[in-house]
Length: 293
Image 1 (spheres, one colour):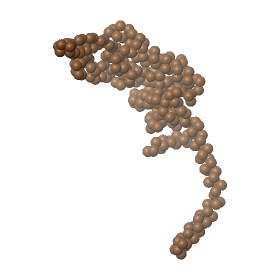
Image 2 (cartoon, rainbow, N blue to C red):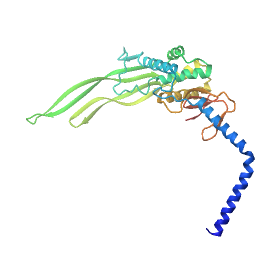
Image 3 (cartoon, rainbow, N blue to C red):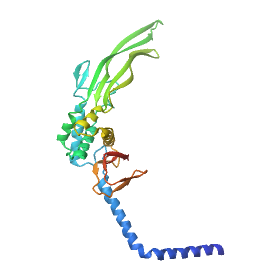
Image 4 (tube, rainbow, N blue to C red):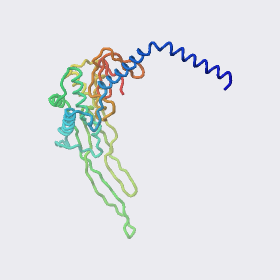
């Protein structure tokens, strides 16, 4: 080792001794602060982070029972007011399952109940579930569609013949659910593929009548007396929370509230101080969305 390197090492060792001598009196305080920080982090985790998984393995028996009732109620709401060619039906009939993204989900019901709990302290139970459900019956209207299929074939004599068959099915023409009021437009088209020619109504677009989430907005205004200025934000809170419940995202709380005035959390962009709540994966401060995790 060169004299230069020996001198550098000697200087480093001397510097370390000086630093240690300076901080040595404060080591007990540093250790206490570190332990307190670890304890606070553990406490926050214990209070604010509960997993809500799609298999319901982390739920209590009461939560599982309520979730099951929400699932049953959602199925009932999606089939209680449906019509095919003007006649009542108990089924979802669209040949392309177009109802899927318009149905009310169990998570919507739970999210609305959780919002009740957050704003007015109502208990999450079957009584509240039935009360909420009355305002969110889904309506799906269908029309019968005939599909005409023509197939060209050649016989042994080389002559060409055309065989025709018809199939029937139902297409969704209107829906009115928690997602909004929609009409569905189709146009008749003939599609050729090889020797087969199919004539049927083909979906072109859906048309929103009124506002998206219109019934939910009316519910918040009329039932929970939410101010007009807060309606849009509160709708997003409920929908994002419902997505969190339904998808079973990790680190998702059902409904949590901070009891300490000094809690501070961060979204990576800035600090969110003091009182906040968590509906599913969405943190809310003073009834405003702060960020999603």
